[in-house]
Length: 364
Image (cartoon, rainbow, N blue to C red; front, side):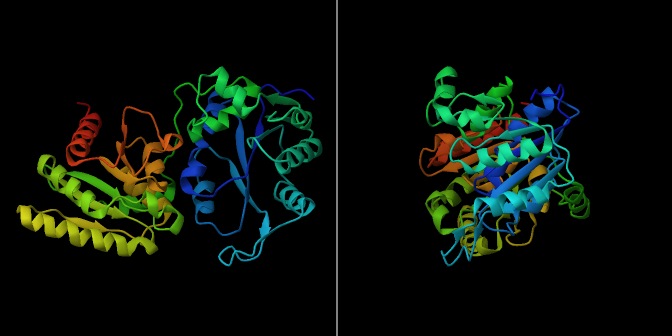
């Protein structure tokens, strides 16, 4: 089987977290594929732990994807912790039904480990008479594919990367089989038609002399709580920034993050009162879909966020973004001129970084 030049329909197989950031991390690879073959159609096949993730509709509307299909690989209640993996043959049948009428001439398995996705790749490629590529993470794995990339460790060595390479780079291990390198490609996102409609219906006027700043405290799930900024420290930083660069503040967040937003707003208003300052604060927690959140982020001049989904969304939209880390997390960092990643910043460092980003946004 030979790779068609150029391939018309490319299937992208992934199996990992359905978090917004995890999904958007793959968009750089999608952009690189479109740069190589502009007329190609990209089709995502995601193996997820349970159905109904809010991110499904969001990623289906991504401008680089022609289609997105989600196959549940576990049964049972994810909350109760009694999920069981479905038999591989059942998963394969669901995947084949999802792709029944979809022509495919190139299949890319992005997963470096396990045997589920190699077997699935081989089965789909055979049925569709498509060329397949994947990662030869161990010697025998290369025999599942028509073309194989070197292992992740070899890729890291060849490119001078540490084992903590950022998550975006990981998809380029598989693309090495096609001779595609990342270069300066960054993750990508554009507001959908629904997002633009919301933007039109909610113009959000900003008083003269102020910027629109979106703050995402986030990290509302139990496993993410260690990444949440200290609210008192965050309020101190935000007030100090207001003294240097006035802004209109918009708080984002899911419905279950409304309480932390309310706690922060109380702290913020007390500090504003003590400093004799005023700031318009709008809390959007639980009120926006992911597409509407995209619209809100897209019209900001600055985004401040914890290491959570909206951070990656803002970076993908190329909005100047400061990410507040509580500890060093190299794989989560984005390294661009319009992004600053700070670990438990003090007031001075926070303000200086934000002012630099505002200047970047204004062309200064």
